Length: 142
Picture 1 (cartoon, rainbow, N blue to C red):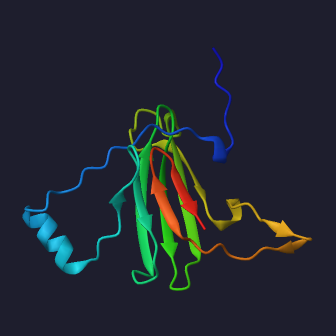
Picture 2: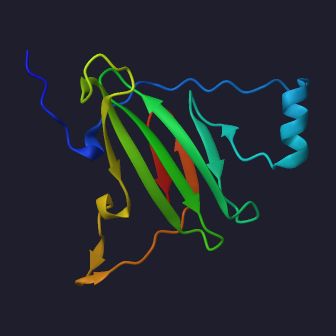
Picture 3: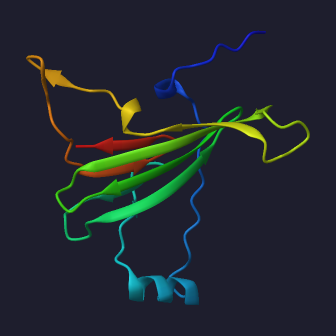
């Protein structure tokens, strides 16, 4: 059975489990004292950050793994709400160094991999992010 290589936007990732500390734990108390709450539980199995501007600028990294591919996504949201996105896509079964678990094929994608949206042949401009949703896929809404 052949498995075609999918374009970057079509990579299917396995559902992600997020474990949050309980409110009474010492880790949760340390986190609440130093950083605002961003993520809340959404519908079903989703986790959502509704961006209101008071928590910006902010940078974070999310790692996702699937059956044959994984990715690390670095996202930064500037004070004006614009998004900067970079990712490393990792194919663990494709080894570039034999018998080395850290020798997987990794491809880095920066802003050059983002689609350029135009209107009347003019760039639309940077997207202002309003929400980030994590439900097995990572979705930025603006």
